[in-house]
Image (tube, rainbow, N blue to C red; front, side, top):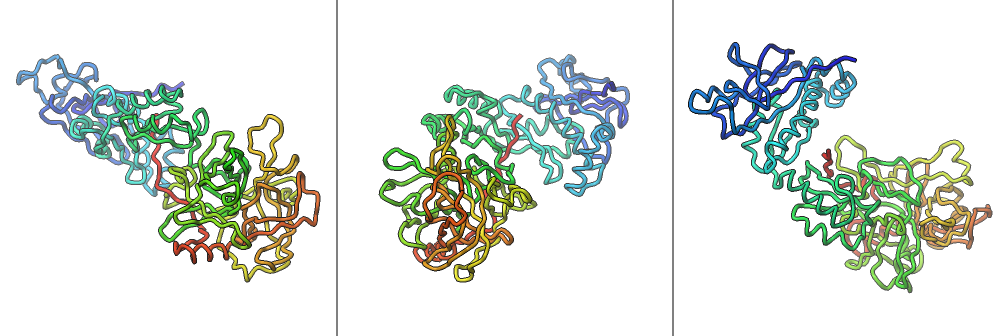
Length: 535
């Protein structure tokens, strides 16, 4: 086993030449007259010159030479009272030799030289020990750090007071690529707040409640141990004493390529997933998401059937959830100002649901300029769909809307639903689908466009309402499920018919009533990036 050379670095003394062992000690700014600044050298660790014969120093026992010879002007030679900030590092060339794949990734991804990529990997290696040293040496100031690869491979250090830490790290190798930025709360205070929040909510600090260093806040994860609508949550967040918010446990930047409609609590929001909707009488019904809508002001909405939230059992303002009996992930809420839902004759069976408070971030893509963010409908395979044998489950990108007047009899269209009747012991809302019906995507022939809707020879069940009808080949939105032939359980009737409310007419109706400029979006929903820098 090869033993790697490790050295202790500090801010004012360097011993030896490039590639040799280096040792320096960084101190608080009030304890030094000047601290030399290291410069960047391509392919090597930058060094600060020291007088010939200067003694090697350690973080635990800094020498007088490490502090500009101040001992000769009255400072105790022992360095008593000085606090060092140290970091371990290796020469860049050695790090590059041990991490060729990392160097190749950075060089390709950010179009930099291999020497520059190697420098970044070396800085990454140094940052781990530097973080621990700063936390110990500046507990009331240091607030965390992260590497900003997109803007030059800079190690960004948060601090409530920037000058002390900026001075302390100034002489470290590659200090030219370290930046200290002001933040409000030190890491210690955030960590203590996270521990209190975890205790108040009876969850685990570091697992269920964590510190987001880049955002300078505390994050409480919901959807596992803690339900999103836990009665204690709002009060605990408000009393945290630092910025704190709840977030769905699953990483919203990780995008599933397709998902079982029953449990798909993962960004981005797509057509064809389960929506559970409590009724006035305490029961819960099931519907299905249709398409993503976007208003001219940039707000996103989820389109589903109007009869899901408007009717005799829906006199209150309805909220929609995913997995109501499980993690209970919030989705949308019935809009009352303006009213964005109707349940009358075709095509006026629609509900444009704005997101519940803080729910959009759970269901939206991060804003990333280099990442495609298409709007999607879910194509989830079921046994009675013969296409499963060849294509498998996948997402279909929504490319636009086919106007109702252009839809033709004889076309083949596909529909995705989430209707389900749970088996014994399963924790799902029974939508009334009947035992044996499996939610997912089925395709069939359009047999009529008369009567204000699109009638398709395809199987559907209660709970599929609001689900998307689309053309698979070009990703065009056609309609959302309104009603159809009665049926329960498995799909056994090859002539079963179901009718879909045309999306183009729904959008026209919404815009005529509200003037909000709705459209079926081909991108998003989108949100601002959420930082994640937890250790």
